[in-house]
Length: 149
Image (cartoon, rainbow, N blue to C red):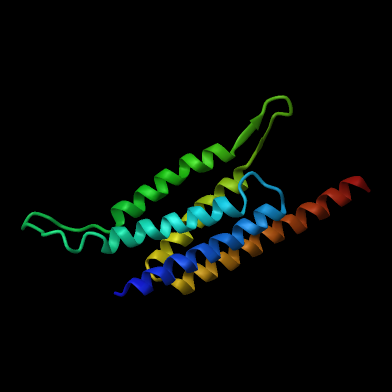
């Protein structure tokens, strides 16, 4: 695997994560372009390092490589960032930021997919996320309009 393939992987991750971040930025949500861009980039990089970064380390008979270890830690670690986006407004008794936290979570998964070279599934996932966010926004405005009438 060439270094340029790795560059392509992190580039794809940042573009796809950035697209989700642009939607969040446009909607003025807690985490926008830069956050989603960085989450996707970091996830892709962790996946690449996990899968290929230790190939020169000599193995002993009792050793085994598990490329999923670092990826699993990305999933756990992103929970802390997502938790920071979730805010409980005590005075109004509402919770906000859950969709943004979920976007960060799925952006990390998209970054991991790009890091693993799965461009088609990462692109399809990004498209589905954007469709889901826009569909939700469309129906939310319809409901608000009906309440006003």
